[in-house]
Length: 470
Image 1 (cartoon, rainbow, N blue to C red):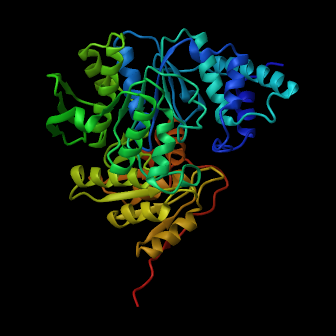
Image 2 (cartoon, helix red, strand yellow; image 1 turned 135 degrees about the horizontal axis):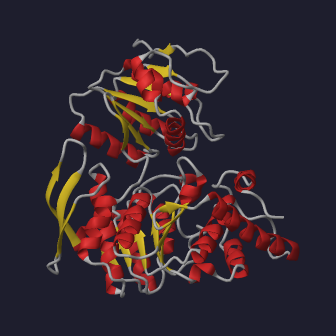
């Protein structure tokens, strides 16, 4: 029996955290796609892996392709506000009805495979979503699909495609439990998306990661473009809002001025990576003129990454969920907020490098409010406060995320800045609340305690003092 959108979402959630069964092979997804008639073969694709930047690069490439007139599909994870964000066609989220249709189509075939014994157990959350994305892209007549790896690469459900171009963005430590505890191991998992003869763009900067990617590309005969040797950035300049403008030049005489719509110096590298991938696509017969590359990068939207949602004080949402992301956030502060007080609203998942991230961020903030997103994986606010104590930092404990934002707004002056960060789950929770209550920030900044919050909450928690020396 067909289910509704709400029922489809609930059934997916019943499958558990999407990180479940990450070390399985690709048998499940291949079996499902075969039953569906191999929808992943009905459109050409780009495949993107990496630790940081892969979502931004995917969004840039999708925008470039749309600027050139292609009908695109974009598959990304995680979502911030609604699960529909993960499946987009021509820049628009999948509708509730189409999401339900995709779920029903995939679930019907899963039931057949379970009944026949082809599948030993129900596929995971991410395997189901991946099959749904490919099925929907076929139904929607997608010409080019931009596919972001969920985690790792080699065993990720998206790794059933043979793309026109593979892309590997910055590689650093994250998800060590699943990918390995050395950069070589992590890079090896990411490089698992490199296919025989398929050109690959690498933005890896670490020499160990570079060596692993080079070895993989050489082993399978994949032409490799490393952006640090193939391209150079010239005439780099930034405005006061954190946006950059620059010229990308190549040894073959190619030059193009770019102005990414996304904030932060790290988006310069992401833009060069997207440009390199677009040029490889052009070499394979996809018409992508230089003006489409510049237009797509100038118009791209990617929420939750240095996204400003209010002014006076400035309020930014940024999903800096690992040490590499935290370093980029610190760099953004140093370059664009020198002399201004920063107020931090921080929440994290238990399986993240919380101590290392806190050590980077907490001492640089005038106020730290620790909170927790509504996820079973979230570290408790009190646990984060204990981390703050070890760093000699005072913290305010406020488990409810919108109350945490209100507490930061109470401390901030109009010329200050507030950053909500540490977890994309937290960023998404704040975005959902602000969508429901668009006056929340104004009320909280103008009159203490009037930010809308969930009912039944306890009174605001006290400030947790840092330990005294000696």
